[in-house]
Image (cartoon, rainbow, N blue to C red; front, side, top):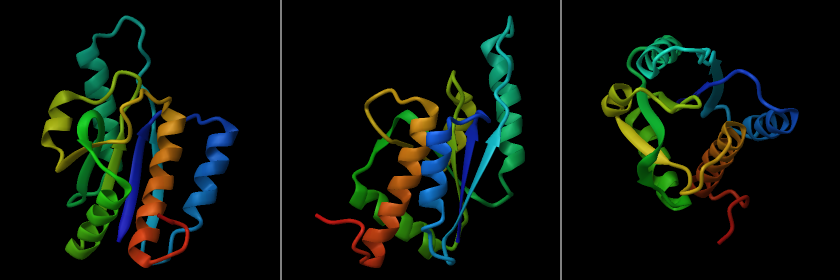
Length: 155
């Protein structure tokens, strides 16, 4: 199974890249993890609809056909670590590759969010995009560790 994280925004601070790389290398071979950063649309005097359309096009271009699309959204379903572990197990059991999508500064196109298979939220707090990437990869790794009985997750 493949987990693809598609994130709007190409530059991450060194600390965030280091943290991402550290967690990404821990995933087992049967659970491939990939990050695809897509360009943030320059804001300028463009309308929000124009920005959404440009970023949506880039996001959709990064996702292979047939992937299950899960968007990170502040109004999405709140999950505990164990609930995320259950979701991960279900995704693996279903055989689908999964694309987890992190929007840009203005979020994601509302129609794209509505069309996604699932909407989840990482936190009730507003997080910087770099922190959201790190938190997501850590929680995905933790979810895998729960399912694998790995000692990383302790209750």
